[in-house]
Length: 75
Image (tube, rainbow, N blue to C red; front, side):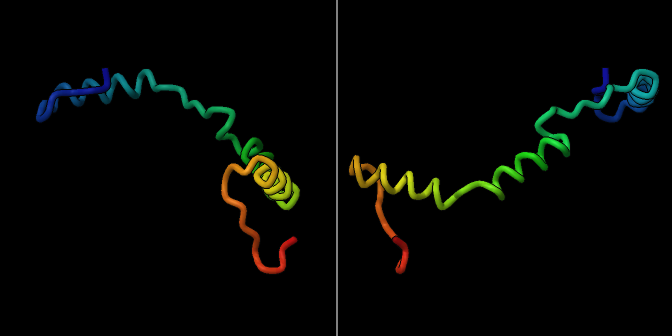
């Protein structure tokens, strides 16, 4: 048990000794490991966002759903 009642120093000491004797193993989920994050960032940075935007724009023009706006000079 790692929780203790307030102002109970003896219980706090026991909890600390127990925690030191039986530490909780660290755990890092796969999606938080460095290699995974690097891979996901590469996907974001290297994605064809202009192509994605063109597909969304074409779909919206076809269906009439959503907003359709272009920046000046955009095709």
